[in-house]
Image 1 (cartoon, rainbow, N blue to C red):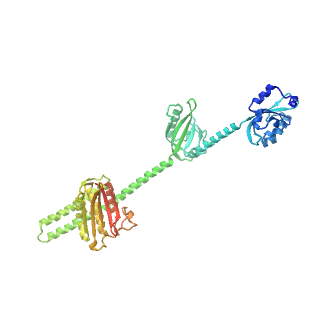
Image 2: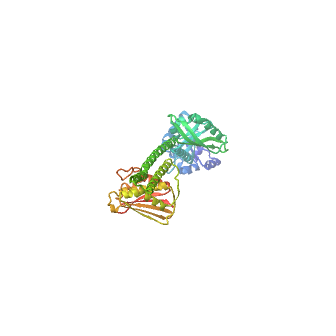
Image 3: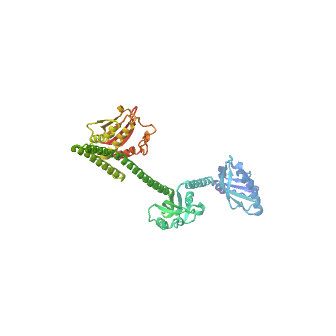
Length: 499
């Protein structure tokens, strides 16, 4: 202390107390950089005691790079009197006793009135400030990253529509670079028809006369010449007083989705057209297939009538009976055409309460000609308590006749004595089940899963449309048709209808 006093150091007790009371580190060094004064704040900051620090070169408290340059700074100042640090202050990297480094703000001033130059340095620990700044910057970088990885356009506009900020995806949508967009006017990118509407929304948002958010659809003309469809949502950004300072907008590019929707609708229309053509084909094939039975019966009865008339003594009663059958079959053929035409026109199925026992008996009667011609027996087993069902009589008869005809065709190679078709009808749980089983060779396993698909057939000359049409009819009646193997041989078709 005597040395410091002799050098002109202040020894006033009040000054010493003041220096020790401050939280910052205060040091006094001579022209050679040796520490002459070291306050309590410096002790706390660096971990050295006053006795340990006084007399040492101040480079003891500096990072390696600052320590190398320190003496040069002092010499240059003494020669040029131009202060690079002295009188200006700067951020430095200080070093504690344990070797750890920390950022500090250093202010240096020259002490006048002494024989030899001396300098006072004040260091303020800015570790927390630097850490907060870094954290804030990291948060900003993270927020920017969030914006850039977002798959929607995010932009901030001022009251004039000038772009203050925009993310990378927004620049991609507009076909340019982010740096080129900041400062540009957003309205310039909108197609002419949408500009005024968007301007009105922005004006309303800044005037606080709209809801907290506005949304809508707009079209933009990107720099690459592509017109894009955007669905945007904008919310006002307000300051503490509630005044709108900017408008935050997000916009989703719906160009690809709209194109996909158009393609989907076009494809659906094409499929509907193809389905209509396929249905027309099914109906045409169904008409030919189903009309063959009543027309064959008409031909058979007509030949019988001719034979009766050629017998020389025709029996009027027989002629009337045969003509009655011809008339009945002709009416049936007409009804088939009418019903199938209605199906082609997609009119609602005309249903009525029908006695299925009587329907099955009539169906077997209609099939008798084919049964006799192919030496096939039919066994009918109908539950006497079978309830009525609301069905289209002609359509259900079509299905049953088709299944019986398929069973007859399937048994062409079966021994005559074993050609049997079993038709049963039962009711369980408000559902009527009609099963038709034959003794034929059955259906190949590779065909069975697709047997109800159009153009799938096991017949050499079949069209593959009969079962597809049958399924359409049954499903229109809110029922189901299913296939299963008949056991060791044969096939079983089950028609289920709501009672």
